[in-house]
Length: 469
Image (cartoon, rainbow, N blue to C red; front, top):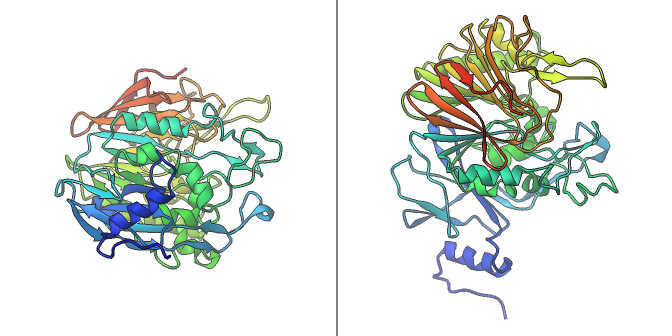
């Protein structure tokens, strides 16, 4: 006899019944849900679910349909840059569903299949900043992180601790996906891990370990180089970007990468005449760009767009993946430590239009890419730089000095006044508003304990410790 349910059963109840029948007793329904903020702070509810159709979203007890953003599909093969011969097409055997949410403060609650969605705040006072959260499996660098061991891949613990801090907004500064290649045979630390650019790897790298934090608050999801079109771009556009998914901007065809690798910035107002400016720097290069390069022209256009957005509010905080004003370090074997300046591609493109690199209205920059935590403040009028690339992926371990040597600077013309760092430590950063231009910035370890405290006041910042040890 065919399975049937009463025809008058609401769609949300139908999905709940179907999922409950398939789920393990005591386990949550098999779907991911989250809220992402986009242009002008518009909030979008997302649901990722293996089902015949999108479920309803219930807003203030009124169900309404969710739209299909992307159907289940196996998308065209994009060869893995780190090992092209080991590539495979990316399979997404689930629906990406979405629905716009009303303006912050205009509704009491929303849910999907009985699960409550986080409410956006019109003026968030408590913000979590994380970045570089995936587990690195990369053949070209022979780097295989122990994804199965929390001590070596602690993103789930970090997400839980950050959720317990009760943020009103989460900012991810990019690089969600790192499981590019298969774990080598005999490697017990990552044995059995999914790999490639499909849903199984995305789920293992981000959605499953990040579930507690995805349910705690709405997110801003900046794009990193691991989400450019040659890598995890197909998943980024399908799953994370707040804007409509458009043909040609989905990274499915290499011929469209001039569109798929770049996108316009957007502003998210957060009260007190302040905006967050979200920039897509996924395809820049530390090797630099020159006039005539596609990226050079694209990032000059990005600067112009950011400059126009920065005029909308007297105070702005920039969000991008690649730090213009931060430092890295490298060492070959037992050789000396070499200090590395900020991203050359962005510095060259932005610097061709403004020697200060960033519009005057930007107070601070939040970035990742360098796998550590860092703060830099300047006496030269540049905005403070914070780096929060320390939330899961294999950490940078080459030490940074407590004080930068004379003449060493992250960018031409930038005069460093204060410098603080934490190398080889996992955690998350928080920002608590204390005034129009004042923020309390704290660095937390993976248990949530505060390891450093900083004050951001205007463009300048100062931390209690020069180094977290």
